[in-house]
Image 1 (cartoon, rainbow, N blue to C red):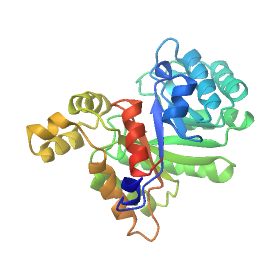
Image 2 (cartoon, rainbow, N blue to C red):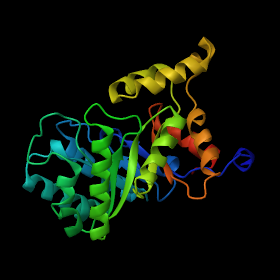
Image 3 (cartoon, one colour):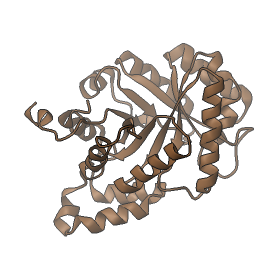
Length: 284
């Protein structure tokens, strides 16, 4: 308790991400996650993803959490499959909150190529899902230019303005706080006022981070982090997210209109480690 009170700034609140096939028991979830925590369920394209995600969403509801399943546009094979998936989420697991992403594969498996394609179907609205997260990439993406990303955000914001959907941006994780702050400010300057939730890699070993960072295209900022670690002992003891989060929180406190509303944690070092860190710092 003393550690939480002495935290130097107001901590950002946090959501967290889990692989559906790794969902803990309801009792474990209650022990690890505060009631009302937003828990994102990642779609990694496994054969049983749909069934596993539905089961995980139901278990999260039972534990008092808010499930946020991913909908990956390019992985959905048909309009009927999309409607069925959203209907099951809403009616069988009480889902009212989703993350819609492009899908990370070059060739779509069905008729949907982008997040906007999913939004424009109207299925989310039909089944009462008003809260929708979309993806952001502060360090850029090999799939599109920054100009294309800005235009896509403008389209999504326009969609929110002409409907009653509540959109937010949830970003890929990064290790460069200055870059993330600059990116969030650039959105505000272009008139994009959707809430931004920054992606954060949870406490973990550096070897684990290197593997995920390379796979997710954030190797440049990880290289910067490793160089700044300074010595082998730092690499051996592991990564503390405070090196990324705390500078952002300090900067946000100086802004009249903060550009970042929350953080979203990827628990690469395990759910228990991430939970302990978030509780210790007062984000949970």
